[in-house]
Image (cartoon, rainbow, N blue to C red; front, side, top):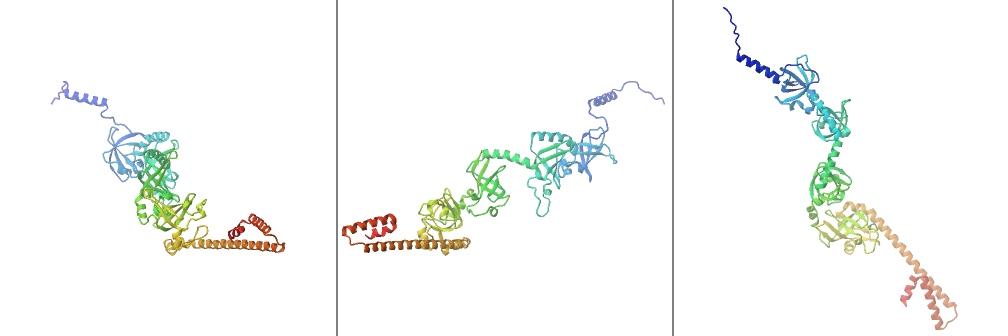
Length: 487
């Protein structure tokens, strides 16, 4: 059999050759090539194994599988493997072109890290604030992978990181959390990036405070969260800025302590009292946000009632007093005693229980006007006792029952006032007795002089008596007054 080879051209075969050449020229089918360390390539997630994630490298011209170990995907978060879905495309860094198992050792962290260093440098220079997820911790602080770069957050830069009283590490609870962060130090040569949550939060809150100061209006009621409790009041976060609720604005009961009323994290309604744009301070009130509480407390009282009250605070213009309920009012300095005084301490002391007459109830301003001066007459009928200065020296039993703790504490004070009052009375009696004796001696001396002198005419005697009386008035006006009255 003779093989006959046709020399005529085959149009179909020539078309296939031309199409393949064109395809190669256009780059539609990449030529097979070798990988090298440090190269960044694209792959498709194939699945998960015990040691990491399997990836099909699709852009090297031939089918090749790579492995991303679990320790090379921290930049994806605390549980990076769960965040890569089968079929998802991912950029990887070639750590080792071929392992003993014939796989390519890959890294997501290093692929992102090359670009991440440039991003972090830009954020450092621009002072940008960004969010990052905590991936771990050590004894010095928190670890975070940002843009593929391993970074460190010292404990001093973590907000609220204080050692637990039970010996637990407070940093462990931070793993997996998203934090606002700011780059405070970067050194590529030393592979060092230091972040700060504290600096980021301070800057963020400053921006939020400026915005909030523009939005807030005095007199409105806002919902806030208690962030700090101090002995002078509580701080409330209004959504980026803290305002202060002074101790006197916590409750209608001014003696209530902040730690007994609230705890950090409580949500409270607050009344905006004052906004200082210059100092950027916000004064708030919790009690004024609930005026109905004051109305409920005051329903038991009417103008004209005389009730006992405890002096809680002295100021130059008067004293504050707490009535049973509790509700507080003001005793103006002019309402303490009938005489003119320079300061309330001349009549009352903090802790004194005194009778008070309600002279004014201002429902719109939530104020009570009280008077000790107008209550004295009725109070003495009920058993109240006062010393010569107007200070309380004894209270009736019904008042002591309303304020039992104060009554016990006041016992020594009342005793001291009574002792002082008796001493003053004794001194006054001695002084009066001395003046009486002096007048008697003067009268005896004048009588003796009259007996020794010759008999005078009526006119002479009258003139001599007038001269003696005038001299007596000039030397002792008090002694002369009775004599003149007698005449």
